Amino acid sequence: MNPTPGPGARLVEIPAFDCRHLLELAQIARVAWNGPRGVAVVPVNYTIADGAMWFRTTPYSQLARECGGQWITVEVDGLDLEGGAGWSTVVRGVAEILDGNDVPEHLADFQVWPAGPRPLFVRVEPVELTGRKLLPPPVET
Image 1 (tube, helix red, strand yellow):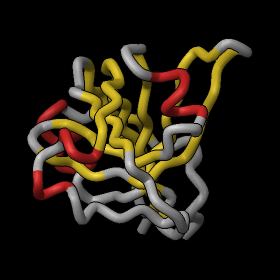
Image 2: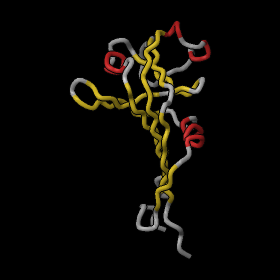
Image 3: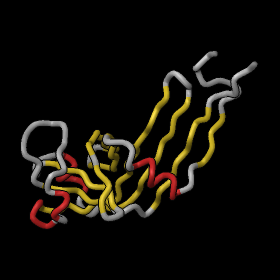
Image 4: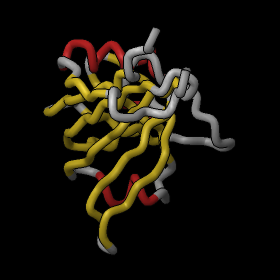
């Protein structure tokens, strides 16, 4: 079997309800926004809580300096390299920057991979939630 997507592979839309479920399966996302020097993209750890996406950051990060009150786009993917399949979800919403003291208590233990304190939280309430799934070509028998 050739796992590389080819002529038989097809893209299908993922309903918003299923996108929400997929977001709960991953831990890494890419956040994109229109910054002063053009489009900026950074990877983040995230969690889903209270219907929103949450990231942690530092006050001096580009994310904290440029995104508060701005529209951002967040992409999360899942891949099956051997099977030639995968999915991608895109969340659009306005980034809200919050001090760690102003977030729900159950988020206090949310850890990120980079070392060091991350006292700020970014909250994104999804306004648009879309997704696509790449289905592998049918296996020929």
